[in-house]
Image: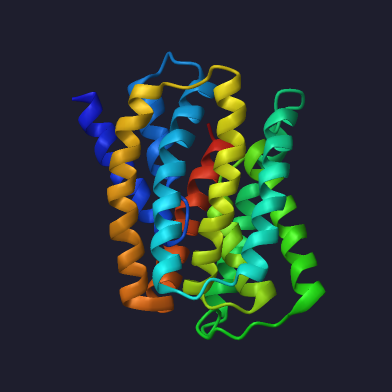
Length: 252
């Protein structure tokens, strides 16, 4: 029964993650509920193992049907790969607790900005090119990559928001690029968790299959319904993140 619950959670996480990120909101709490006595790092590592397969499938699905801005995706992914590993290493030395109180506030500002600007992310109109575009991509990849390895919640949503806000992408194009960067983040973290022995390989493989199914459904929904659908789901996921991170920081 536990494995069935985890399979359903992984499918749902893959679906949401494929559209706007935030699948960890679904998958991780279920893992912690099913295995309350398991080491947190092992559960996070197992979630990353499942997540990298789902995100990779979503990235391929987008690449086949959406014009990926590789001049942004490639440098951002390379920087994220390096700095996500650095973040994962740093969290073994420094506690990320100081971020818990700030995160819901930052997410609230993101939600207010997105909600207030009705046309935000509705049109794909890139704002930069050449060296400036690549430099900005490197900075975003490095910053969000480190954050993902060090702390993590909301990584996918932050990537989507920044690609829309800074590069002028529409939500669909931003989500496509975010998947490429997410794969790099997950791979770097997975290397660290695998090296340190914090992985349940069999369970992760089962959940990976379910994540792949959810990712295929999610990416097709996003491409079928376009940026308007992605924007709505983005606001829903960010709202849930605000409640979840606010509860974790200030109430629990």
